[in-house]
Amino acid sequence: MNTQRNHTLELLKLFASYMVVFIHVLFYGKMGIVVDALARFAVPFFFLVSGYYSYKIPLEKIKKRIKKLLVLLISSAVCYTVFEIVKLLKYNPDELAVFLNKYTDISTYINLLVFNVSISSGHLWYFLAIIYVYIIFYFVTKFGIKEKVIFITSLLLLLLHVVLGECLSVFGIVTPIHYIRNFLLMGVPFFALGLIAKKHQDKFEKLPNYMVFVFALIGIFESIISRFLFGVNELYIGSLFILAATVCVFIKCANVKYPTFLTALEGCSTYIFIFHIIISTVILIICGIIGIDIYSSVTLQNLYPIAVCVASTVFAYILIKILKKVRKSKT
Image (tube, rainbow, N blue to C red; front, side):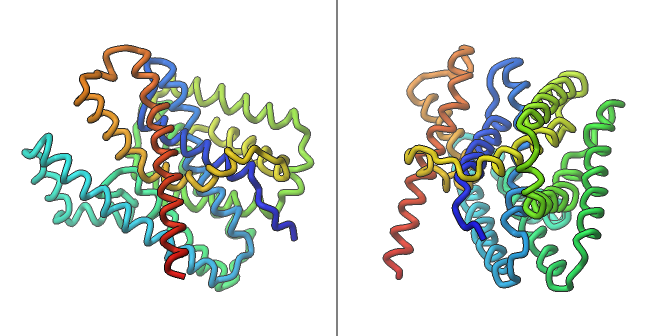
């Protein structure tokens, strides 16, 4: 078995984390719309990578991943709850009661447990969703459910996602986002596609290179056209083609070597994903204090998402170093 680290895959995860930033912190005007549309492959990519790394792993390893994700979810939720309370106390105390009331509302917990709608910050839905997916995968593995059943079920769920999302938007029907952005209609299908990619990676590797460009071009054009014609969707059919191209790239380029300064950033994607919302808010606050209005010019507005990416990467890198030292001191 080839145990060599796939640096291409890890760097694509880093790139995907920046795409998530660009969904939440938009570039100015049409450029922001285009980037937002293209970035919609990013979160499905994270589910796919989890599936890719999970093919034929033992039950014990699945349990370890669930525990690790639970720690990330709880710590992130606490962090965002505290941050939101501090922010509201400082800038909008009248809204604090509204925020805290969410924690006593039963519908909040129904949406959390059924649709993975996060209470503290919207983007944290991913962690509860992937935990659910791993729990399902644990029992699927334990009871030896056939791969064919898994893949057919997952493809049907993906089809339902596309129908409820982009297809209905063609007719002006907007499906509430939490009905399709959850563990069942996004997490399970893309996790299963990751399993497929791992199982059949030799076939992806043999695809001619021009097919990768074809997938990418179809994905780019379809995503942009659909975004301008039918509005914002959580996922576009074009996103599926972009994902196919991305899978081909990290399989075909599995043994590519990269400069040390790039590989040093490989572990940052998770913490960039978690903390970029806080960091984007902090940047706005700091700019306000020193008298800079980010939205006063096109240049500043376009620099803002890039600044969030840079600051989030630096923060994630430092945090990783600190956590490593803490773990080392404990051992």
